[in-house]
Amino acid sequence: MEQAHRTATPPSRQPALPAAPAYGSNTIADVLTSAAAAAGDARFTNALKLPAARRIVVVLVDGLGKSLLKHKAGHAPFLRGVMAADGAGEHPRTLHAAFPSTTATSLASLGTGVGPGRHGMLGYDVLDPDQDKVVNLLGNWDAGVDPLRWQPLPTVFERLEGHLPTATVSLPKFEHSPMTKAALRGGTFLGATTPQARVQLAAETLAAHPGMLLYLYWSELDKAGHAHGTDSVQWEHQLEELDAGMKRLAAAVPADTLILLTADHGMVDVPRSARIDYSRFPELVAGVRHTAGEPRMVHLYLEPDAGPGTRDNLVAAWLERFGSKAWVLTREQAVEAGWFGEVRPEAAGRIGDVLVAARETIAFYDLRRVRPPAIEMVGQHGSITKAEREVPLLRIPVTVPASKGRRRR
Image (tube, rainbow, N blue to C red; front, side, top):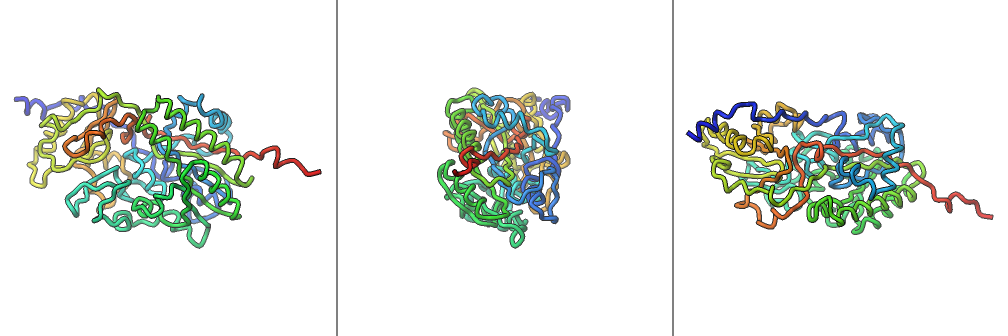
């Protein structure tokens, strides 16, 4: 009787689905392509209406949601001033992260200029159907996954070769990483460990080229959020460091440089009591062969021989227990809703048969699969809520220190 009751869960229990990211017009996927067009390459579309510039630097701050920046603006006086003044241009000031709102997915959209369904980087970890195993797409790639086959589309940097110099300034450990090869290959890689060194290296590199598109990665804020939460003094300190770094960058680059600041996703703090080991509930994993994804965006993959009612029963069971706290939908519903954008056939099997995207402040773990310390993570992302999907797009004005403007006597 209980099983029948769950199968019959009324559709009204399902919250309305959020609109899909506006791929092609107003997302993280449109930043580098618009910058390339603004730098003069007519093969690209300036969807974001960026002003023309020969030198452009795109600063990608991992984990800086727009709502967080607005809420914590007291710790970022320089960026607060930029936000207050950044209203004259035509470009949007808010972008959508890719879906899922996670680093691997959004950085791949940034690097390729296309939505997740086309580049195939569909989560933190996902199923590799060819191996019938879950593989990580960020920092711990499986030896059986070739980054160039998994993500075969040319990157923006590759397309610009021979037309405009490009460079990535990031942590040295990422130079030869599979993630870089998949999502950001091409151009010159320049490594520096500290944020201060990265800012200086970016400024020097831009000054050495009359025209260039440079990507600067800022990782420290996301790390502080995961470990301590966005309301922690550690996170606020890293925001202050970012603010100081952007002020230094604005004073160090050549005067004709266009500086853009954006992010790959936002973040929400999830209390320990709301971090759920869903594997404790048999009905939530009935017929499931693999679990993957993020704690706030779970992929559930069914057994190949699952009966025709298995998926419906699984959706109903999740709605019965968490229907007021999460969106629960099938692969087909997510694709039809446009959450992944256009999906190429080779990538479709990487999407879960059933998806669970957190709507409220909650996170879902399968502690049969992940190590118990993973549940201690405070700051979370991955879902399609406003806090996770909305990221800033700031145009930071270049400043010339007074010492540079004085004439020698």
